[in-house]
Image 1 (spheres, rainbow, N blue to C red):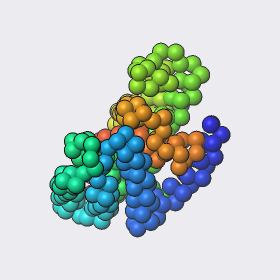
Image 2 (image 1 turned 135 degrees about the vertical axis):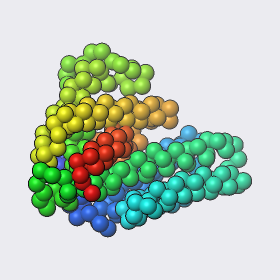
Image 3 (image 1 turned 180 degrees about the vertical axis):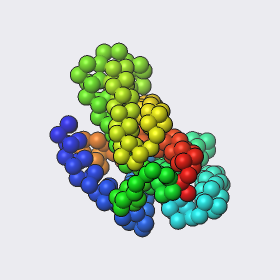
Length: 284
C-alpha cells in the first residue's frame, strides 16, 4: 500500500505543479476534471445506497462554479456562484416529479445539492488560492514560480505533510483513538504529530515568501486542525454510505475524494486567513 502511494504521488505531484505553474485554461481544465471525478464518485455512492441524485444538474452547477471562480471578476463571481447553487436546488426539485419509484425526494435533492457544495464549491478555493496576490506586499521578493503559484503551494504542502506524518506516527506509535466509531485507524498521537508537521511546513514555506512568523504559526495550527476534521468528516460520510474508499482511480490513495478530503476543508479556511492577511499587508 505504501509503495503504491509513493509511486502515485511521484507521478501526480509533478503534473499538479506543472498545471499550477501554467494557470489559465490548463489549470481550469485540470481542476474541472478532478472536480467532476469527485462528483462522479459521490453520486455513484448515493446511487449505490438507493438514492437518485440529479447528476446532470450537479455537474453543470459544479462547472459553473469553477468557471466563475477562474474567469469572472470579483463583482460577478459571488453572484454566479449563488445562481449555480440556487439553480441546482430548483433543477433537482423539479426533477422529482419524474423521480424513480421508491426514492426519497429529500434524499435525492439533498444529496444532489450537498454534492455541489461539498465538492465544487469547496474545491473552487483551490483556484482562489492560486489567484491570491503577493504583489504589492512590502518586503516580499517575487519570482516567476512564486508569482504563478501564489500561496496555494504553502497550503498543499502543509496538508500533505500533516497527512503523511499523522499516518506514519499514528501507525507506529498511536494507541488512543479520538473517534473510533468514525475512523478506527486515527489516533491522538497521529493527530498531534500531524498538527505539528502542518505548523512546521507552513512556517518554512511561508518564510520563503517573507510572511509574518506569528501569522504563519497561527495559519499552520489552523490548517493542521481543520484538515484533520475534513478527514474525519469524509470518514463519517463513507461510513454512512457503507464505503471503505470512494474509488480506485489513484492507486494506494483510493478515489479523488479520498485524496482531497483534508484539502476541501483546509483550502477555504486558509484562503480566508491569507486573504485578510495579504490585504492588511498591502497586497492588491
